[in-house]
Length: 384
Ligand code: ADP
Image (tube, rainbow, N blue to C red; front, side, top):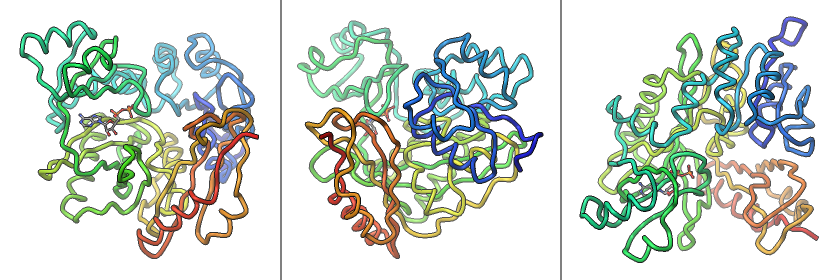
């Protein structure tokens, strides 16, 4: 595909998701350009051309985007004003800037679900902590509830679960926020949908986040999810509806809650490759990264069928270690069959920083999970 007429693809963000997009693009020898601040970031050495600049800076994004045919993102926290300007100048930007504006703000997301009759937890908007306290005091708001900063949150940062009076003093976020009902969650699921500008749409198999039985942390992402076929069909249909109503182009990762009463609610969406789709590289017929490139280039989408049951773990920086990363136990990890590690090449490790991931496959989910568990026990990201 790569020749002098190959479209130049520009990615805003040089993290691990950007790196894996570059890796998928390399198979077709696509010219992939990445904009981010530092040559030490994961995607820098894997981009055809790495451009140093700030994706939050209007001028940097404009300058970068004007050299591209198609611009995409691996993070939502970017300057969208520049992206709107690029569209006005005739450059393709996928996901579309207005969708990024919508998704960046959890308040606008909730309004979108309400406007389109998409099931989500009940919610209301508040200007800040004082307004939330006042709503509790005058009986409008009852415990327990969840307060989320409208913008800027990630990986649970910017989410506060408020269960009792004392939490109002210690946990409330001082930010414009969405306050929503605490959902009685049976399982957390994710479905990745891809849509092209022509409207072709494909859905990846449903993933389940398995939590550690005692620590409140996602331990494995497993696929297929342990849900009955009716629930699976409803999850896929709901995710598809969100992507269709949004008219999104590219990947849309839809995070869902399956409630104890069997309802499926949309939690939130992300318009880019997602942590819950890493396993697609080895476990599915087409990876989420290749699928995103197909979508933004308006090429036919690939089949998304699951080839083998899979379990994915994130490799997090070990507690008590900060500094240059060392991967202890690498040989032990590679001795486990059907285990596919991906290191992101971040120079420095910190406790709980996402340093890589491992996908394990097996004949069954149980076998894949067991292999992922062995992998987790084998390798530790430390600092000497
Ligand atoms: P982030 O954007 O930081 O990932 P999320 O909105 O996904 O934030 O919330 C992080 C986690 O908090 C969810 O995965 C879920 O475990 C929990 N959570 C979020 N909203 C609710 C809710 N309404 N009820 C119960 N738990 C929730």
